[in-house]
Image 1 (tube, rainbow, N blue to C red):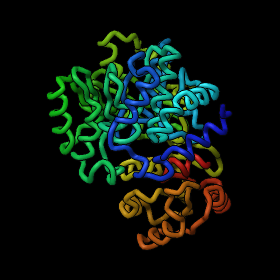
Image 2: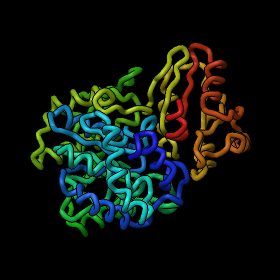
Image 3: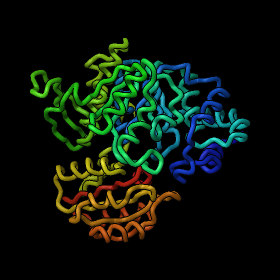
Image 4: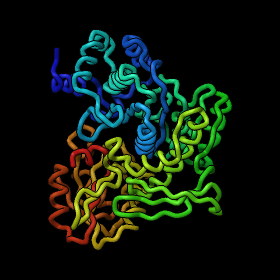
Length: 429
């Protein structure tokens, strides 16, 4: 029997892993997932769930929903990806990470099958999560889609509710080059008679969702048409949002979130509409509970890397923004943050639309180009060269700690340092 470090090594090195090698690890069907799941006794049929897809915001939305159910007294499973520091962050019950012994036992148990079908790292991890939730007898599990939706391993569940936060450009090499094409992949989680909440209406993607929902006879609502954020205030570690059900703000509710990114206002509307639909299905999610949970999402669920201030004088902020839309939101936040000089520590993976991202970034900042220690990372000198061509000034650093050290050394107390561009870069900090 393998111990925990050996089991992790087996998972990370023996099984094809998207975060390391990219497209080669992406499976074009659910065949392996279904085989693994049958081998484990179809655990996905033994608990209720909420399924969350989307280009950006699905992680924050999943954690907020988990916090709300947990605070309401439900035993709550939460499956997310990728992890930042510890593999076990992906699978939690009431905020607590899966036991190391369970990880070892599970891998040992399914090894005879996995040796013969060569599943991906993600396929094994998803079934492990579902098996854990079933054995823990959770009341509900919040399940975040890994990539896309239609062919994602998580798509074997039959949830209480499907949520799609938004659609923007990411993983075009796998999901398609147009917004409708990407939306079609995400819409793959819409199922017969299961209600669906879409976070944001967009002229190019709305017809795709409407058509799929009609086809599946699933009731559909757009969160950004049910409620409106009429005002918000950014504190250093919190965000206060004023939410109304009409654009004229006749009836206003105030929410405080411990996730300070302004982009969380979009996720908040999605979460509130999801809660509204779930209440109609009989889940007891009292307004006071919702307020209480949103104030302590990080504490309840262990969420990190969403406009997270980790150092003061100078302020050093971590954010996992890594695609056009995410980076646009991040830049908006930077503009609203008091600072003198701006220092940006940037590393990206090599299957991103780099030029589009570089074109968005401000010229009047100092850049520290770096790479995460994974095969998919774009080499820092290549990134620096492409950035220079786009008019950005900075130097390459071979590792994330070196880049951060340099930024810290150059930054004055009133400056702002932001680390972003890839989940894996943030993970190394």
